[in-house]
Amino acid sequence: MTIRDLTKLSSDIIDVLVIGAGAHGATIAYHVAKAGYRTALVEKNDFCGATSASSLKILHGGLRYLQHLNIKRMRHSIAARREMMQLAPYLVEPLACMMPLSGKGLRGKRVMQAALFLNDCIGWDRNQDLPVDIRLPRGHIVSEKKCRETIPDIDSEELHGGCVWYDGLALDTERLILEYVLGSISYGAKAANYAEAKAVEKGDDDLYQVTIQDRLSKETHQVKTRFIVNASGPWFEKSIQAPGEKDKKQKWALALNIVSKKKIFEKYAVALEGHTQYEDKDAIIKRGKRLYFFVPWRGHTMIGTEYMESVADPDCLQVKREMIQNMVDGVNAIYPPAQLKYEDISFFHAGLLPMHSRSEENNIQMEKNSTFFAHTDDGFSRVISVKGVKYTTAPYIAHEIVEFLKKECQPELGIGKLENSSVADGQWSSEQLPYKDILERKYGQRAIQILSFMQKEQDSDIWIDEESELLKAEVSYLINEEMACKLSDVVLRRTGLGTAECPGRKVLEKLADYMSGVLAWDETRKEQEVNDVLHRYAPLVFQDVCNE
Ligand SMILES: Cc1cc2nc3c(=O)[nH]c(=O)nc-3n(C[C@H](O)[C@H](O)[C@H](O)COP(=O)(O)OP(=O)(O)OC[C@H]3O[C@@H](n4cnc5c(N)ncnc54)[C@H](O)[C@@H]3O)c2cc1C
Image (cartoon, rainbow, N blue to C red; front, top):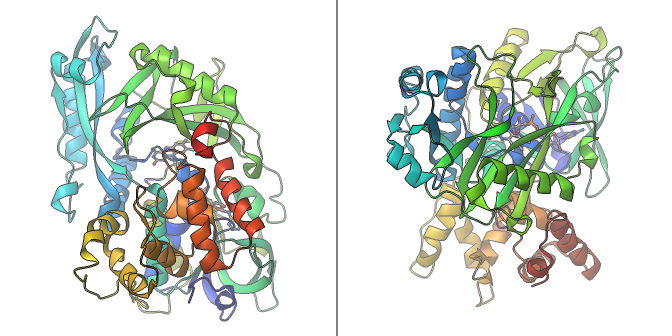
């Protein structure tokens, strides 16, 4: 029986309805439900299908906030990163980052050594309660030789070493957010994907009545709630418009990362300065250049982040071939030995982020802090809108919102009461044991829940595709227990099968065949599901791969 049931949303009055299940909405729903509020979470597409799926996968501890001397922001980042790493240790690993050092002053060894020392002091508790294998070591300075080994043929005569620090790498940002969604359900929240908040009205009983449309069945449901948290990311001005707050005020920038099949650096995420001058208006210690990160990830390299002003509607966000080509050219200018070609690009990430302003020198200044605000219009009191700028700090905003709610009304349910423990009991039989590692790597403790689906599987061929290590039982589990409704949900947001590159038409068709059996899709629907996934890679030169 599926856990996606929209009639459950409207069965009782709830305390807090969260709109949007990106990093912010999902962490808010988790913490609000854990605090004891009756909570519901609705997402108009799939969980973590928008901006939050585009992150560069770095869970920052905020070393670069030292530039702004913003210790408070660093502490928030460190605490939030630790929480994410604790929640799903199977989805994170330490990421060694290296920045070459050349010249004197801010680019010199002494300054960076002091910065690393401060970073470790400010993050003294960064590893508290973390499993040993994901703890983050202290930062250190490496020799020029080591730096040249890591960044071969780096063009810098003044190079005299490298600065190394550690952040968290989210192996799968989409599953990490799903962990928060599933966790919120464990604390009693009701959650649904493909459920869009369409309209908000205030009833005579002073409760909000929110019309939710099930985008799969097209049915509508009315949800009654005391509070609304609008965590709809770049849609935040569109989702809820209080009277008197109709004007769109927020500026947006399109942020872009590219994923290359070519491994550019082996073990380190390397931070290199861009070529054009960039002045960070808020920085107290100015560097003069924007940093680009080259992050090794799943045998690929993620490179980012590039920003460009955008007036695009978030529903029509489009990445054009020229944008990717410009970034490829930019990478070759920053690090010529990369010799990157358009054909090396296997995937890209794009999303809209709140922009502060554009300077006279044409530098885009991004907003630096995630914030939330309670709507001031009387008719719309008890509505809170979130403006998030970082994936990593989302849990911090969630804690702040719980504190805000507690001042308004105390939760009635018991704090931290687990209603449905999502981790089932079970034992791996000798026939199932060979799949234990594969499944635990992908699903952590949840892997045990797949056992019962393995037992039910009638077919002697247990694979959908052996090379991609995709089992029939796991897809059954994802449909039944994790609300996977579409092919793209499985490919892009549950298994990571297609998040580094296109898995190819043949694999997609095999998966679509299997899902058709479970979800009763006809041939037309099946074809449409496959094409929808292929469309995600659209501006890339991949036709040969995708047709295989
Ligand atoms: C290219 C790129 C690289 C980045 N790199 C990093 C990084 O390395 N580290 C880091 O910490 N951060 C990074 N960020 C920033 C981070 O990804 C974002 O700040 C964060 O994910 C925003 O999360 P959100 O929940 O506010 O928005 P979103 O993830 O966009 O979530 C909002 C959700 O609301 C839903 N929604 C909208 N309207 C409705 C409605 N009416 N009803 C129901 N649902 C609705 C949307 O479908 C969407 O899923 C990066 C961002 C980009 C784009």
